Amino acid sequence: MTTKEIAIKSIQQLPENASWQDILERINFVAGIRKGLQELDEGKGIPHDQVRDEFKEWLSS
Image (cartoon, rainbow, N blue to C red; front, side, top):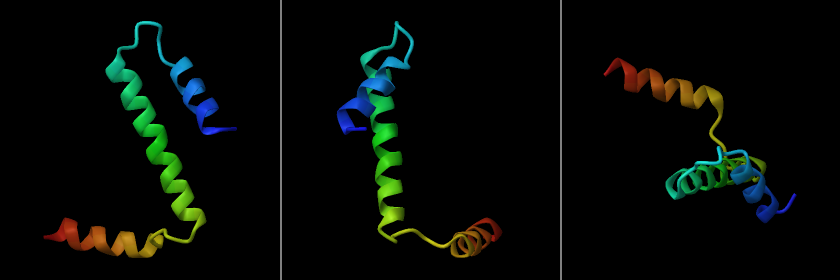
């Protein structure tokens, strides 16, 4: 599916009375998810154990 097709499908899933702000937020959300998935595919992700350890430090402060 192309980027344009994904954008159109995402917008079509919004209610008929969606505002421009709703559309913008949906597009930004989908774009962020797709960027994150691409980064994971490229091996740029952070291992789960590392995230858990960092959260432990952050939550215990």
